[in-house]
Image (cartoon, rainbow, N blue to C red; front, side):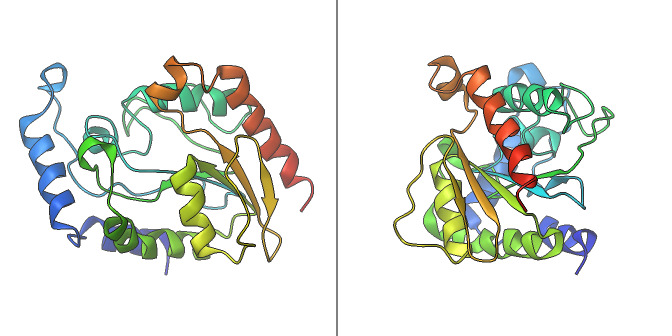
Length: 220
């Protein structure tokens, strides 16, 4: 299966009635600031370099971010924090991700998420994440990254479910674990507005994560 084949299947997915109803309602009603937008309102595919050695995994699309633009981490505060960091480390062609036709390209990194549809209150249920898991499993099989960056505890825990790993691994910002098969799993706080505005995650802390990811590539 190619990424194109996988994305075609993903875009037709309606496995989770609650998420389908929510993503489509948000796309229909829109936020006042985005009334001129034609919202995406569908599952959001992964984005980036198909030959990437790094895969970053977030939680889920934002209702008025990726659910509006159709690109991972695009159109909201999380993306405004993520892409400058990737640009600084040479993984992104520009520090801004505004919409799918803005010219942004990624190098050696592919961005995806545990859940592909925007969930109410940014909280997907366990069964909804389980329904989405086959998509990320097949992305992993196609891309075969050597470094996984878990953006947040939930992404970390879901990735552990999909990889052979000791049961005692714990999420901690900046922690890196070598999984069976040699893949590295690197932890980062999620670049959510809540984390960045409270300075739980700073620009310097996030930059260090991507510098560490690059360094881990040299150990493979």
